[in-house]
Length: 274
Ligand code: IPD
Ligand code: CA
Ligand code: CA
Ligand code: CA
Image 1: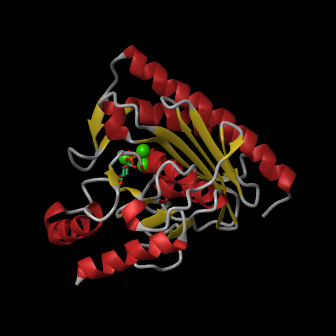
Image 2 (image 1 turned 45 degrees about the vertical axis):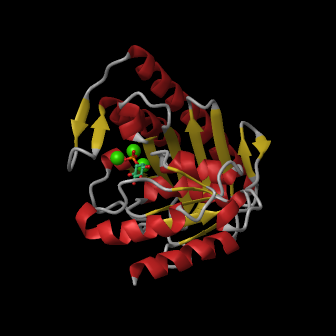
Image 3 (image 1 turned 90 degrees about the vertical axis):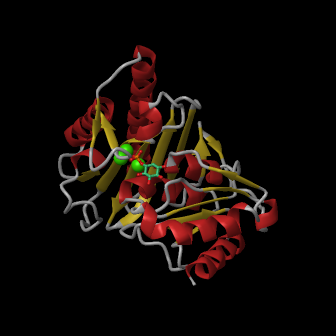
């Protein structure tokens, strides 16, 4: 981890860019139309705004930090979707919640993360329609609009507001049985269940104590990088769905306000798989 003042500089830059990108989301929504294209299938969209925002953020970062590395959802070539470099690596999801964005739903966000020596050290997530910018650097605490935030202290599923997104898993039919069993065991057991459709928004809600846990399969590094730092710095607990230690190159997570609640969810996953 570099000296704190360097991280502070990176944080200021990332907050400024994320907010400007968030304003682009608001402006395009106000404008009322944009090009929407299908990527791999009808549930996997990209709009011209995703591409424009990613280009805007990368152009600005590359100009300031030409020696850094860059991973972005809309410019990924397949081979660079993993953290493999020791140099500072910016990990950008220009719009998290593209489906929502395309439907003019306000649950979307801009996510900018930074890893140094393959460790995640900075996260900024701007939720423009909520008017909230979440930020964190390693050992610096987590903030929303400059004020410190902290996870909740709920540690029983019966009292917890839980979040996940549907569809769950890559091939619906393959996961149907497991998903039904899992949702049965969690959905009926928790106090409330929400599906927001932007994992970054969901994870920020966990970080500020407005939800108690979020779990999801099939995520990519740009979905998790910034949020991981924010949830951690807010005092939360993150692991994989099988209970293993978090590795940003793996594709799922449970983020909870504490390890007790996370463990309860891990146990239910295990039971659902059998
Ligand atoms: C998606 C959203 C969604 C999650 C998907 C992600 P995108 O990101 O975060 O909530 O369930 O797995 O792919 O494609 O809108 O950036
Ligand atoms: Ca996408
Ligand atoms: Ca995403
Ligand atoms: Ca995206």
